[in-house]
Image 1 (cartoon, helix red, strand yellow):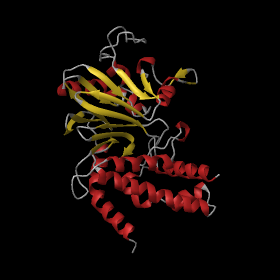
Image 2 (cartoon, helix red, strand yellow):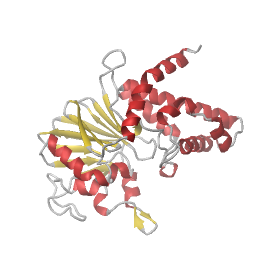
Image 3 (cartoon, one colour):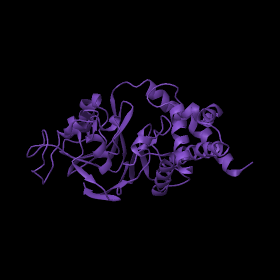
Image 4 (cartoon, one colour):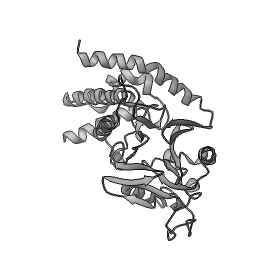
Length: 324
């Protein structure tokens, strides 16, 4: 038997109970925010079905993603249980409302230290944290959908970047915000270098298949490249465990081995769908062939905003577009 298949089967057997436990935990979410110390000065907030990253220190507080709007008060209370320092930075990893819905309320509690000329509702002379995001994330949140923008103006990023990496130095730590197209064309990866923690956003979602937004420039090819980059960035401590810790957009805290399992799923499903396309199979025929069957107990969904069928369709269209 092929060695890679044996290793994959072993990895899935090891990960399955952990991932099922996580999925069950999400299904029975208590609608509270839970604080998990990660390492260094980094904390992970489990806010409903999404994760928020907190870095706290003498300079103040930095957040990666804000959670959804309904959880804003609880997220703020959890942050204050960690630090009473001023909120200076809020980094959006993409424009998903589950991550940016709390932008307006949470950012307006902050202070843009050293800058007193920001404009916009509520920003005034001394109020409002910097909201950092890649340029296309800002464009999607501010551009009209019909007659209305996707988000209110006070939720829009006000500190955008359009280069490969934006660097910050905050709380005695180098922080790199890296543009990495994945499920959209505007994803950001945030790495805390001294703490050795990566905040991955929707690039890594252990509760479901990757949410590939084709209209927002996402593709399964870009998702695969982003996962490969996460694997390359993470350094293990020993025996493929520990070392760099990775905070996913949803699901439990990870290390490199967890990303490898998720990456293998994306690789195998992509290879199967690519093979079906080469045989001339239609989208419905590919869905009927169930290319995700091995992983459906872990990530599959038949209802809700992102189902297994929707994922297979996104993979099919990604690969079909490339083949043309």
